[in-house]
Image (cartoon, rainbow, N blue to C red; front, side, top):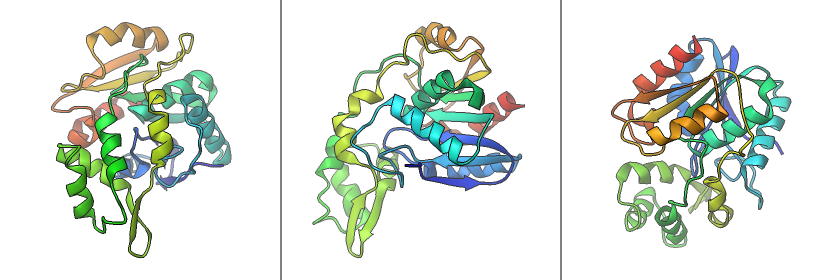
Length: 254
């Protein structure tokens, strides 16, 4: 099965992979900007996310294979590949496995190392949403606020809401499978995986996902990498400081 995507613009292929519980649409604003400088931007929904297919199986090897099948289907070569958080882990593995398909790699706010599970409250909150009772976005937000205090995080999560049919709300994500396999999201890049071409790691100055202690492991897997810090930004650096994020990417690409 081929992943769903939204393709914007014409030019050199530029594939963007969203994070856990996200979707390609999260990147629409930046995608439009990249398309204006001669890139054809592919906003891809990874398996069990957005409008892509649901599957009982979920790990980075499968997600890298999904992207390979997507590139073949769309005849994409020599791509610029950008991944955020979970999407960054998929992007790192894809570049290491299929370096001939990637010209440049950009990884947003994630390191190749292992991360412990830290989505418990979010997953519990999403699981608690009773769509036999909840009939509006406002009601869903109110229910979710018992588990997730941050308004911005709730706004991001509730982008998954859609009308399954008239009068019936639901979530686009395959929540049961993502809950069962949440440990996969934190998995480290395989120890021997490397990618020798130009690579940019972007980190938010308020985020703890990439610290100074990560620099050695990043350079070990990605010897031609640089790490750039985006100011006034946490883990959602592309949403919190899109101007500096865009500039950092463009400086790297040109």
